[in-house]
Image 1 (tube, rainbow, N blue to C red):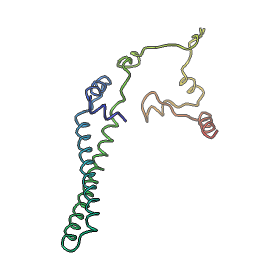
Image 2 (image 1 turned 135 degrees about the vertical axis):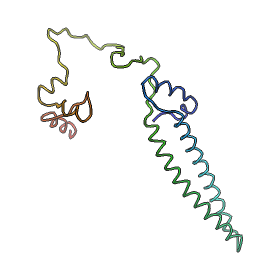
Image 3 (image 1 turned 90 degrees about the vertical axis):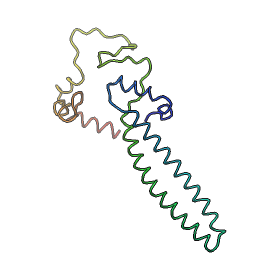
Image 4 (image 1 turned 180 degrees about the horizontal axis):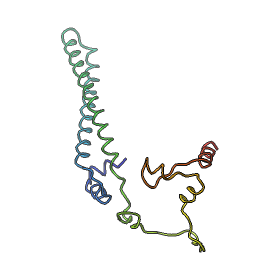
Length: 177
């Protein structure tokens, strides 16, 4: 989840990050949901403190005043239940909305439309010189019949594979180890 304090102070940082990534998210909705949520929490806390104070006062009252205070407590309880339900609904919307926000990228991260915009920062070790064209791990797995790229692409799109045969057995062995 994102830093809400930073979001409240500088929503334009998140707007630029959203724009960089080509997403369409309305930060105004996020600010509004955050304000409504915080207002409800404040009101609920205030009602709870009133309820606690009234509970202490009721023990010292008698007769008509006590009944009047008890009725007031019932109204506070009803208000608390309604506000609690409202808060739960707002929190659900809040979580759903904010889960669509991207994390902030580092200031040195290059902006690009695809992988071709990536910049190599450093290499580890010496790159070996090969007299053949190396295959990708996906091609090797498909040739060994341990990865299923076609079936996975139908379900989740490109760049995903299913494990099969010995790869599944190896995965389970590693999990159980």
